Image (cartoon, rainbow, N blue to C red; front, side):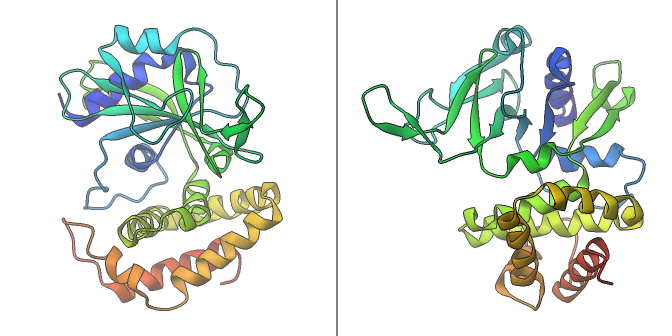
Length: 277
């Protein structure tokens, strides 16, 4: 089974909940290929085995997602990410080459919750609709004004299209990468995010007239600390050549990227997006 067929099976299984979930992470970028405003490039996106499925804080999810996934050949497995309650889980497709889904929801507040013993514990996960979701900071940015894409019949491997998949708009995709940069302590992980930022700006550069209004609306919805973090992130990563850019250009294996060209495109892209060109 191809990677797209594996993902398509997941998306079809989640059809009853698709109006309330957003596919984020690396698979969101791969799905941009089906957005008409995306420029077609001759290289493949960074590979990822996992499909991240996000839903909003306090989103009413009815029914049993876990039961639906198990009926489609997925099994729940521990995701060894620390001692949390409920324990973090991933949902792995039987017979697939490592493909699995994870569920995510925004983390707000202090990040702590009462433990029932007079103390507090990390507020890192929640159980909803039968599945365990991880709570992450700044995830709400990815849920802001999502776009819709459709995987055509000839690519799903299922004999039918997978329609109206919600993915982050490209502005949210890019801005969230900037907001989480302090959590990406390893150079490789931060450089990986820079590749995503560069590639997203590259394929949607021609749609900047659509992106600028989205940024203005999103900026108004951000906390002032987040607004500052975004600006600081652009300055830290793209004001001059640095080790992150040098590492980022080594990540793609199917193309050669010039570090100066990567830096220039990102710098000019943000100037256009922020209305500073």
